[in-house]
Image 1 (cartoon, each protein chain N blue to C red):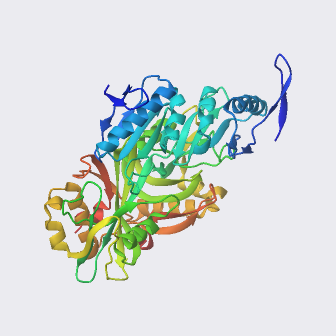
Image 2: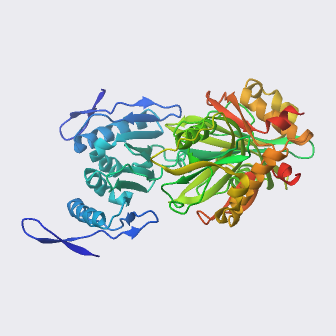
Image 3: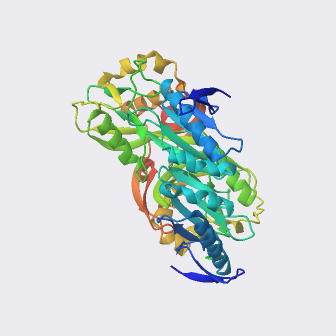
Length: 276
Length: 276
């Protein structure tokens, strides 16, 4: 651990925080050892003075929840919240005089909705144990939330497997929907996906699913809950357009970005691109 | 403010926290007045006891950054972090014995990328002042981040206006890409959008943009940075397929959900749906 001399009334040695450089002229501090909050405040002040001299810009401090006693000290030094996960809080500070260019926090939850049909034109539907449709008797397509670091095309296959034990192959995204204030200030993006079933024996998940079955398309769409929903009728229409006509959604292509140097799926209308 | 009697050595009156009910048998507390952290801890314990009796499940506490002194007290009562925004932290607690069913935190940032072409087959491109391409001389399509509560189709029009002063009309999403670990543990979803220009005189934004121009498609694609990027070449191919052939992306339709009772845009292949 580095130390520097701080000029006080009596000159004293103050330890500096361990930090690593990020790619944007900033530094990242990951706290992991218990420390008295007054000592932390001194170290933080001395470290910021040092980083300022070095021309550093953004300062990130990741505070595990066990070290919550340090949060107040950082906020007193004019740090603010960037984001939080269950077990840590990320605090940030901007050293230069100019407006900060720090990246925004995540703003959207991403969900998936699975349209899975067998050869008898029956669609895979479930009744959920929790949520707004609990106890209503409404049969709905399996849905779920994309987990951290998970591809959309993997998430929807996983959700169907978890809820019904049906194995499926991802075909394409038929449509997606963005909605706001789904919870607190955050927004939702939900991807309606076509999957091809690879197995047919349903085994429902005990914890979340009340019932699961293959249901005829006619019976599904005749449900009052579907009939009164502009959105669900739209989705049903495009599922029908897909199975009976020539509707083309977006299918995934793995591509590498030379900016971020990572792999990701680009979802596009492959049929139209190929047909040129 | 409600009060209850707590049996201590001396029976004393403890105030309860003001809370409102949510739609999932939980309660939401929004702290807004300064309070001593010991008093807060007593009120919190008494309130939880009361909520437990009432059969409440999730407890949400929104703590503004000015009241950071209360965070440690809540964590000591076994609250954990749900999410944070620059000026507040949301803490949660689950009263029942079973596993919690609280909604996940937002996991994705959402970006937009604009393909805008004029009648001379020139595309609108910019050079950015910050970020990874700063100072490289690379010309790129305007990009940006979707703001809280903003529709994708509005965000991309706003970004083009901000960066170049060009007015545009949103046409459709040509493709989208999901990538992971874009920053910390979060993921990115980026939507490549076709916009129709409604004005043509460029006025670049001073703060973020170094230069902006209409550039011939040939010149754009000939850039080494584009030529060496699998992703950018793919995107360019589908832009060409759109302007010269019959590529169909997803266009937005405003729909209402009867589950969440809110409006949102459903993005779908309208051409294929209409053509049935």
